Image (cartoon, rainbow, N blue to C red; front, side, top):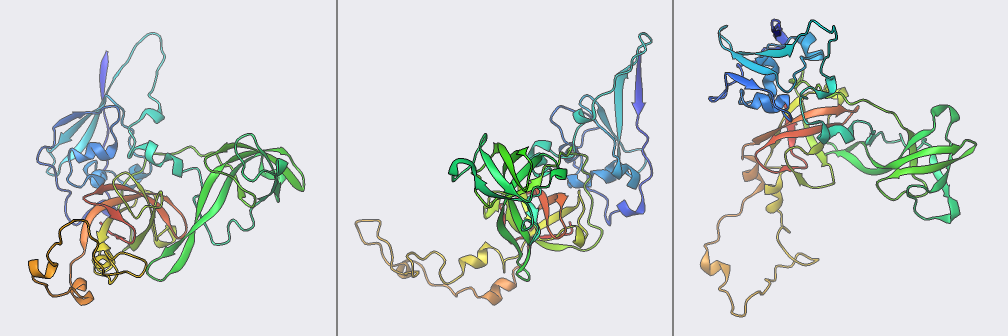
Length: 378
């Protein structure tokens, strides 16, 4: 016997009411069967021109945002237009048996996530951003066994300040580059470079540790933080910021100046600025701070240590001077650049917050995402 379970959709609360209803895709399907590998964001893209607004289409209230419906491969999503405003209903089919009386339920881990877990999982169980003085008082490696310069898996090291009551499993970090707010040049924190993991072999005033895992070479003076096992939760529900936000992209994972969709960026705003897990922000490029203005800088495109204007010769025959081929136009000034409109070209969603910075995943982008670009209310 098969029975159909139709989820009850509660009334939407005023907090979720947008200024304009979410625009539907012209090709939105009436029914869709959830496939393995789908995410809630990708499913919503079949229905909405702005996929991050899928809670509105599901008519979710605040309690549902905290504990959203679980959707599994094989479930059927139905688009209901009967109430005036379109909404999505979930039709889940399951088989019920009279004998034996055993009920099986799908695992939460097999439910369709909001975003792809594999992209952000490495960023959830490590600090990766630390305060100005956070690593200064952390236990540090004071010497290496056998006088080694670098350490790797299986090597022993000696650590000062490692308390016995803090456990035997530790992560190893090195303080990296500062995270600087471009608006005021204030240091928001430091990148924490994850090096590996270690296990205590002998406690004492100077403890002995064994390196159990390393992703980079480990040196004397590197710092240790307790290993905290965290179970990632992937029920990220996109939502607007609760107040006006304007921050900057201050770094990208890997130290690149430009990146793209499904990459990690660091923002200059954090939990103290009102950002929460699931906050969606638009990416904007201001021409006064973007690459366009850099290309008009005096030294852009010049060669040599002094920025020489001497042309390079690549051909045996002399090429006519550029002035004889093209009429020289009027130079573009900073005042001209300031009149150019800002360009909105993508979306990010915050998945981890710190006090004054946060990590976000680039969900959509029509062009390269650059350091120093703005993030603001969508």
